[in-house]
Amino acid sequence: MNSRQFLDEPPAENRLTEYDRAHLSVYLRLLDAEADAADWEDAVHIIFGIDPRREHDRALRVHTSHLARARWMTANGYCDLLRSRLH
Image (cartoon, one colour):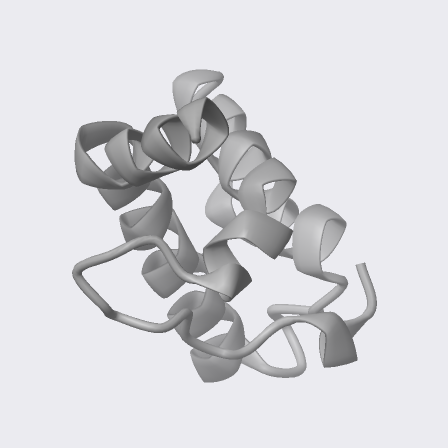
């Protein structure tokens, strides 16, 4: 993924956003990496194209914030996604 295609931190709204819709595959990849106990540095490099050796703080922020949003999606955001698909 090109670093210009994502924010360092996804929107922290309590509803599904267009950003979330555009990044569903990123969220799924992060959840898969977590389930596979993949190293976060490898995940952020592969998924976001950020080298954690060069940009450690940014890489950690991007990974942590997007993984948190992915978890939010599994607990909350999916409801909005399902509702929008039904209408």
